[in-house]
Image (cartoon, rainbow, N blue to C red; front, side, top):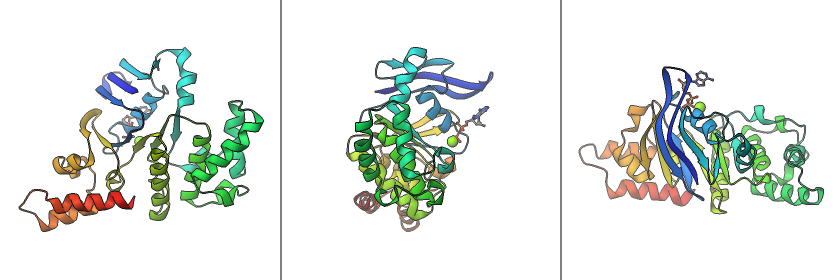
Length: 266
Ligand SMILES: Nc1ncnc2c1ncn2[C@@H]1O[C@H](COP(=O)(O)OP(=O)(O)O)[C@@H](O)[C@H]1O
Ligand SMILES: [Mg+2]
C-alpha cells in the first residue's frame, strides 16, 4: 500500500542520498528500518509522507502520489509521525489538550472528540495523567502522549523515527509494547531504529546502507545472513551469546529458540 518505486533523492545535486529504492509496505505490516547514522533513514521517512519529494521515481500511498500537490493533505492524514525528541512535539500545556488540539485542528465534531480522546489515552495507558503537564512526565510517558495524539487522528500508518532512542530501558520497553498492541489492532507500523533488540519481533526488516536497500526480509534471515556489525549496528544479546558459544558452527536451532523467546515476551 505504501510503495517506493525506483526512488532517487539528493539534497545537493551530485550527492545522492537515496538511490534507486523500491519496496512496498503492506497494510498491517510491522516493518523496521535499520542502518548506520546518516544512511538515509529519516530521509526515507520524509519521502514517505511527501515532506520531501523524489528527484526520480514515485512514492505512492494506495492511489495517492506524493508528487501530486492535491494528494498531500490526504497523505498527511493517513500517515502519522512520532519523532525522536518528545519535547519537540508538544504544543499545549496538558496531556488532554495535546490530544484534543490535533482533533480540533482537523475539525473533528465535539461529540466525537471525547471518545477519540478516551480511546487514544487508553491505548497508551495514560488515563491517570490527563491533567498533567507534558514536560513534567518521564521520557517514555512523553512519547506515549505523542503516540496518543497520533492515534486519535486515526492514521493508517505510524512512522516512528528513532522514537525510542532517547528513552531509558523501561520507557523504551513501554513504547515498544504499545507499538505491538497498536499493530495487533491492525495498524501498520514503520519503526526506524538502531536498537537491534527491538527488531527481533517485527515482521520485516529493511536495512539501508549508503542510501540503498541492502536487505529486505524477516528477522531470523536478517540475523543469520547479515553481519550487522559491518553496518555499525550491535547484534542483539541472543545473537552475541550464540556467537560466543558456537564460534565455529553456523547459527543453531538454539539461537532461533532464543529469538522466539524474545517474541513471546513482547
Ligand atoms: N536537510 C539536509 N540537507 C543536506 N543534507 C542532509 C539533510 N538532511 C540529511 N542530510 C544528509 O543526508 C544523509 C542522510 O541523512 P538522514 O536521512 O538523516 O540519515 P539517518 O536518518 O539514517 O541518520 C546524511 O548524509 C545527511 O548528512
Ligand atoms: Mg535519522
